[in-house]
Length: 584
Ligand code: ADA
Image 1 (cartoon, rainbow, N blue to C red):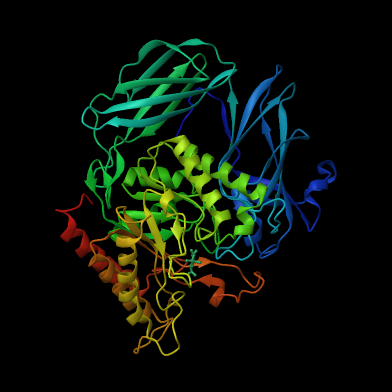
Image 2 (cartoon, helix red, strand yellow):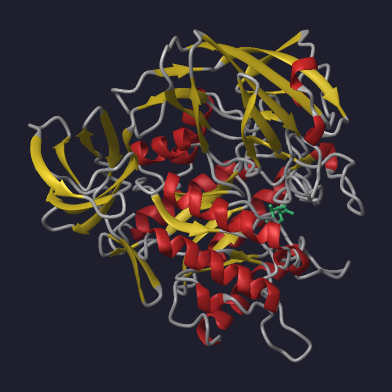
């Protein structure tokens, strides 16, 4: 399954399949002599070496090799479309290094030239060691497993000398279906060109256009347009041709904005009922078979969710395509997890954060499902050093589209000794989002406290902050995480902690308290299903039970815990009672 955009004129070779593999283990990745590597094993691509029996749980360098056929006598420009990997890679074609990969989970393109051969050799060295020098974005203490391998699809495309990079489609007017097309060109760019353009499968129009800085901006009314919404996820395509290249992008006509304390879709207030979803599976990790993604979306629909927070990195474009198709609203975020001010002050970390966040906004620009754009989950939003990074990332997203709604999940919502709310970055966002675990993580309970009794006071406390804090009042607010753990199959009549009964009651109480308070625009429960976490690998952190974060409403195989049924019931009732008031 490919993702939008499509480039029908380009010769495209999928490299998914079985590759040669060699394990170099704990070597110096900067000094690999690839010509000397002996490939005596095989590995799946996409796939993970550290979930195979031989390398399970190992950290080090694995080398992947494949051969692709691209007969050419002249020099040819090619593009490697690299869907995502972890944690750090070096990439060679025909013995020449064409690039390094330092943005775990991001989709990155690499352009290179080949000449005078029929067969070409692609080698990718993948390093899954924690190493602040090569892959500072992923650290050992993150509460999700840092897998080693090639997570997503790989393709080679031929590029003509003048090519179409992207067409960014922005809704300008929902009553007339007017969109702006921002056509980005690459290669040898002329100052004028002839374009062919069509919407859906309608007749092609031809026009002569001026090109400024490689960009063409046009406005069109989409014929026979329909608005996109979760209830009616109507999609359109636009196909643009120039010289020897054609691109088809898919988009939806809809607006996302805020008005006072509300988030609006097509001018109507939204209430977001959702969960947080990692790309995870106990056997495949972040390698997501299409069926798994579809099953997950059907489970979200069954839960009566209209919203999914895609944590804590840019997710697979195929999943986002499916969210567009099925009508699921999305929070998409770049990678960050409890990073410190020292990280934010590090120039390399800072640069990678900006690069991955801009790339995320560009790669995912046309998904109508994405309504919120985030970064730096639970990081240093309580520090001056953090402020500079948060401010730069907010600006980076808005530089791609000033109308994208910016947010981040903050857990700096306690008060300092002086009584001031710790977070200092709320002025930077359009939508404020809180992560809180009353009676479970923070605020820290006394041993005599019953977690259930701490839920309502915490929701009320945050409601009060939302009404009174100068940087929050007047803005939409939602819960980006709240929840508790249960071990699948653990039952207890007295609702002991970690039992399914305990979790079901906890999340029910959470939702009832949030639904009862008009101040909030939604909730993303922590979390959809159990996910692999660090395993005896994080200095100073005790391993989680089973090596999993067990806060899922489902376990890691998507088996239902009691909380799944209680939330399904509650979300259904809430949806029905709010249908007249809210749009979803
Ligand atoms: C945090 C974090 C989540 C998860 C959660 C937990 O809020 O954002 O990724 O680790 O805590 O379950 O502890």
